[in-house]
Image (cartoon, rainbow, N blue to C red; front, top):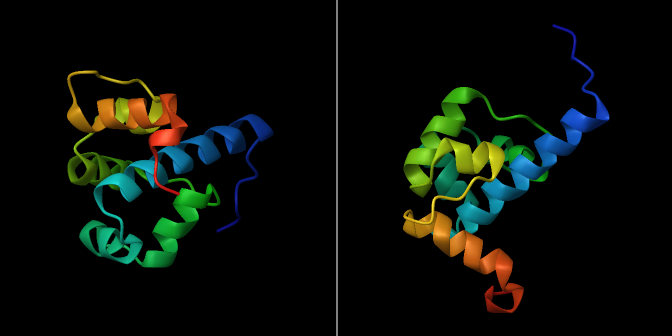
Length: 102
């Protein structure tokens, strides 16, 4: 099957989603291999998603939402529900970068 060439706008969205997933995953499940195991995917697949080299499918988004205890809207659009402790923590961490561990 031939690869579909994505527009630059879609590539940018894919990268942002990957960064958001990676950031949340590091907060909740610091070990990428462990998170991949929980998702039922290879660690290289999760790594490619987090780097923005691969778009996550709907099933991975749903499962990540469950594992990370965030909404799919947060993962896909960055919409923060301040009633969600994990989304609120991510929001605060990005608002005050000095508070995040390097």
